[in-house]
Image (cartoon, rainbow, N blue to C red; front, side):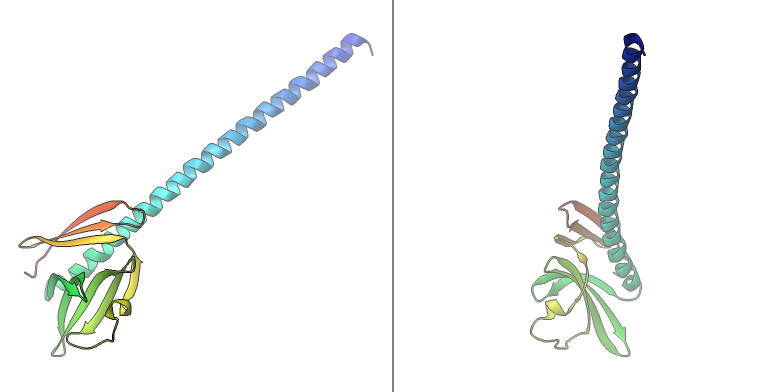
Length: 163
């Protein structure tokens, strides 16, 4: 083998190696970019799911009680609560939706009954929620402002039929 053929052979090998390195780096950059896009998409979908779940839950609870029973903004042990009242078998019952220890909770109880020294902890935890603001926004309109776990704020208006 002469020197010229040896130089051509080395250049060919180096060219193939350089091409392989460029291809590998390009594939790595594409994987990293794809992982970032996937992570952002999952985060957006998770936030959107949390907001939609909160909206759907509150709207459905109001709709279940709205036509025949009473829906109002009230209090439970000093906490602002959405109070859904209903008569069952001649007795009055209330479902309280309220915020306690960073979560939305639901408590169903017979009105006037004693459920212990800490009724706020007795409610079933529904979902994490930082804060909420309940207001009657009109004669037949309920306004709910939600602060989700990530700190984003959402607003919801629900038309009431029972008032």
